[in-house]
Amino acid sequence: MRRRGQLTTAVAGAALLLGCVAHPAVSQPDHDGRRVLVFSKTAGFRHDSIPAGVAAVRQLGERGGFTVDATEDAGAFTSANLRRYDGVVFLSTTGDVLDAAQQTAFEGYIRHGGGYVGIHAAADTEYDWAFYGGLAGAYFQSHPAIQQAEVNVEDRAHPATSGLPRAWERTDEWYNYRSNPREHAHVLASLDESSYTGGTMNGDHPIAWCQNYRGGRAFYTGGGHTGESYAEPAFLAHLLGGIRWAIGDAQADCRPENGYRPLFDGTSASLAGWQQAGPGSFTLDDDGTLTSSGGMGLLWYADRSFGAYSLKLDWKTSGASGDDNSGVFVGFPPSTDPWSAVNNGYEVQIDATDVPEKTTGAVYGFQSADIRKRDRALNPPGEWNTYEIRVQGERLRVWLNGVKINDFTNTDPARSLRDGHLGLQNHGADDQVSFRDVRLKELPAKPSVRTASQGD
Image (cartoon, rainbow, N blue to C red):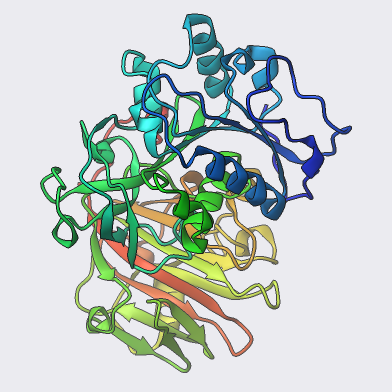
């Protein structure tokens, strides 16, 4: 059902009037563009901001290349009608808004790859429908008065949060939730409960998250109570990024992420354990981004070596040339010579154009990535991507934006992965590649037996 590809121009005249979808939308003959349904039925409290929210999502559609239909008629939830949409936005819905048949249709839609976006009171909806509760990620419990709070942006690669500051101050009605979604969803942003009054989640207070759920994609943001939210550029960018990911126009790693410690967190202090080998360097920008300059050199983590671990980091190419080159090195001995890493370790490549065993996702010179999976998971130049590089024993596996694209086993004793250092390559004067949020979790020496559904 899901259509992949680059953004296309929306047909603004295809949108339905609010509350008028009893039958499939009548629109201009469609193109290959994506289509989003905004659903804002309420059976409980009704937010005055709903019309502003509908108008904002329509404008985001014009900006983002997707057509927007809007309704408060639950009759739109049939299997045939939902197939027309790449994503469904629950905009401050409240209470029981779908009957049993409509719930079944929506479950089928999600299981066949549909996208869900929940805004604010979408968490105050369908308390007796377990599937929906899992999809939304958490249910509303309470809220204090509207006030300013500091939002900690935890994931700075996801399109919903990549353009936000690490500390994002804004005013809204801040929900407390009945449970913490962190164990089963990927938290994008959380509230600093010390920055406002009325938080009840004991200092771990997710406020935006994403997850792959039962075959579909689900994004939720707790913002959006106030009408002013929908005129706020940063919040609109946050919402657009969440919609783009949910409908498949942008890729990100939305697996739960717990137990990692930062090796580089965007601050100059966190670079204390790193050393530059060879020519060139990395510059640290004000937003906490490292960008390569010159080379060929290597910024390597000299504080200690590692044996079994999951290394995660965010990266993007500049987009200017379309052929920037860099890589992440693992398993090499300490040295001030960057060629030591080339000759004694392995490089997970970043390079848009090269032969398969030397392009993005490859174990450079040894094994190509699964090109089909890589191409579907890869964001274009100028947008952030996330690598997970997992080393256990002599096995090296690579995930790109949550999709496993390479599984390599070392057989060369001179390149043993059982103990080694990590490094980021600065390849040359014409190559600009940026990195953010390098983090690591140590693992058992041998991989555990996992099922296919766990993503081994």
